[in-house]
Image (cartoon, rainbow, N blue to C red; front, side, top):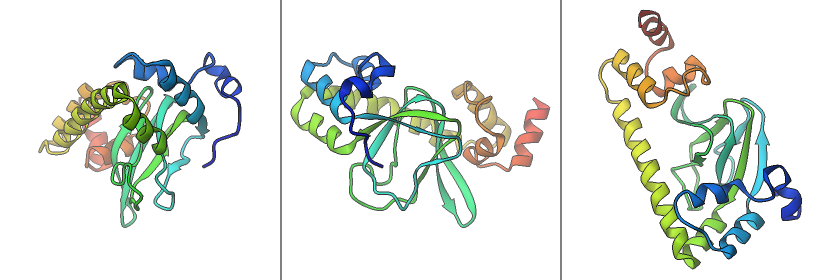
Amino acid sequence: MIAVNLSDEDRWKKYNNFSPLISIFKKFHPLNGEIERRINQHTFPISYKKNKYLVSPVDRNKYLFLIVKGVVRGFIKDGNTEITTWIAKENEVVGTIRNLWIDGDSEEYLQALEDVDLIAIPHVLSEYLYENFPEANVVGRKMMELYYRSAEERAYLCRISSAEKRYKRFLLSFPDLINRVSLKHIASFLAIRLETLSRIRAKI
C-alpha cells in the first residue's frame, strides 16, 4: 500500500481540505497547528470495495485506519473456519492488534463488509506524535480507554453461556450493526452456528 503523492489540498479536497482524523482527535483534546499539519501531510484517504481485504497475514503492519464510511471486520482462521473477532463502523480506528506498533507477523485479516472509505494512519506518524506532543498522548490515552472498554464487552459477550442471551446482548451493545452485517459474520462473532442464530432470530 503506497500513499498517492498529492498535495494536502488535493488529497483532502472531498473532506473540506483537511484529514478527518483531525476532527476525531479534537473530540478528545485541542490540537496545535503543527500536529494538524503533520496529520494532513502523512495520513491519506484510501477506499476498498466490499469483501476486499485491507490487511492479510502476508502484509506488513504499517497502518491503522480510521473508518470514514462503511463497516470492517477483523478475523483469524482456524483451519478453514473464519473466526470474527471484532466488527467496527464509522469513526472507529482499526488495525491488526496482535502486532500493533511492532514489526512482526500477525494471523489477522481485516475485511471490508461494505464499500469503505478510510484514512490510513502510518505507525511512524503515531510514534512521532506520541514522542513530540504531550496532547497526542492525551488523545491516545482517551481513545485507548474507549477501545479497552469495547474489548472488554466483546470478551464478556463471548462468555455468556446462552446463545440467545449472547445475541440479545449483541443487539444492546451493537444495535446499528444488525442490519449492516451478514448473519454468518454475526454468528461467527458470537461463536454460535448460523442455524442456531437463525432459530434465535425467528423466536425473538
